[in-house]
Length: 194
Length: 194
DNA sequence: CGATTCTTTGAAAACAGTCAATCTGTGTGG
DNA sequence: CCACACAGATTGACTGTTTTCAAAGAATCG
Image (cartoon, rainbow over all chains, first blue to last red):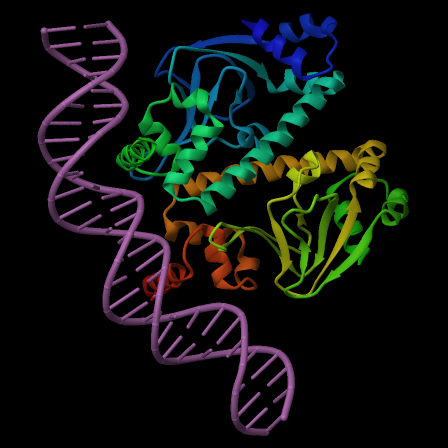
C-alpha cells in the first residue's frame, strides 16, 4: 500500500516520479489491528507516519486515568508526535487504532535525507506544516470562542468523514466534553432539524 | 529599534551579519500606542510582524460582540495572521496594543525574497514555524485536558512575563473563561498557598 | 445467542456564567 | 494638588450549563 502514499506525493508535490522507487525503498509498511497501539507514552518517537488505511487516535491519559483524544488520522493523513520527533524527548501521548489500519513509516534519518535531497519533497512537507499550523490555530480559536454545541457543529462540518467512523465518546473526548453531554447536544440538534 | 530584530536573528540563525544591512533595508518600523489597532478584521494581511517593544493582543469578536483573546505577543515574539498572509483571504482577527509598542514590519514580497535568497533565514523561519506548531499542539492539549484552574496554572508557568503585564480580564478571555471565574480561581489558589 | 462496547436517559451535584454592586488603583483635567 | 472619571478586580446572589453516577437500551462482534 505504499502506492497510496506515492499517489499522495504525486498529487501534492512536484517530486519527479523517477524518484519514487527511492522513496519507496525508505518506506516501511505496518499493519495495526483495531485496539492495538502504534505509540506508547514514554516512547521516543523516531518516525514519520502516513496513514494509508484505517483510523488512528492520538490521546493522552490524565492523572485520574481519563483518556483525552487529541487528534484523529484517517487515510491520507499524517500522525505521530512531532514534539518527540524533533526534540528527542519521550512522548506524552499514545496512538492506537480505532479500525484495522495500515501505515507507512519513515525513519527520522531517511526522512531527513528525503527532505535534503529532494527539494520538492521538502517543499511539500513545509507546506503541510504550514497548513497544520493554521488548522491548529483555528482549532484553538474554536476552543476559546465556541460552546459545546458550536464545537460539535464545527467538528461535523470540518470532518464529515470522521463523524461516521469514530465512536461518539471519543469525539466527545476530542471536544473536551463528557460523552453524555454530547449525546444530549445531538438530541437537541436533531429536534431543531424536525 | 531594528537592532533588536537583528540581534534576534543573530542569536537564532546562521545568517551572515554581512547581510544585515540588506535585511534592515526591508524593515519598516511602526509605533502603536496603547489601545490602537495594528490589524482589523477584514484586512488582508500582507506583512510579517516582529515585536520589538510592548505587548500586542490578537483577538476575535463573536456574534454577541464579546472579545476573545487568541494570542499575545511581547518583545521578540512574532504576530500577524498567518492564515490571511498565506491565503490572501481577509483576516477574522484584530490586533491591538495593550501598551505603547513598537514593531518591525516586513512585506510579503520582501519576506519571500529573504527566505529565498538567505537560506539560513529561511531555516530560522521554518524552525519558528515548527516550534509554533508544537506549542499550539500543546495548547490544544491543555484545552482538552485541563479545567479552568489547571489552565490558569499552566499559563502562569508558561508565560510568567506576561502574567504581570496583561490585564486579568484578557487572560481570562485567552483561557476561554469569564473574568469573574478567573478572579475566584485566583482566590482559591492564594488560599492554598497560605 | 451472549458478551462487550457504545449510547442514551434521569436525577443530583458541581461548576462556570451573568448581572449588579462595590472596591481599587491610575491617570486626567480643573 | 485634589476631585473625578475610568478601567480593572473583586464579591455576592442567582441562573444556567456541564459533569457525575447509575441504570437501561442499542448496536456490534465473535
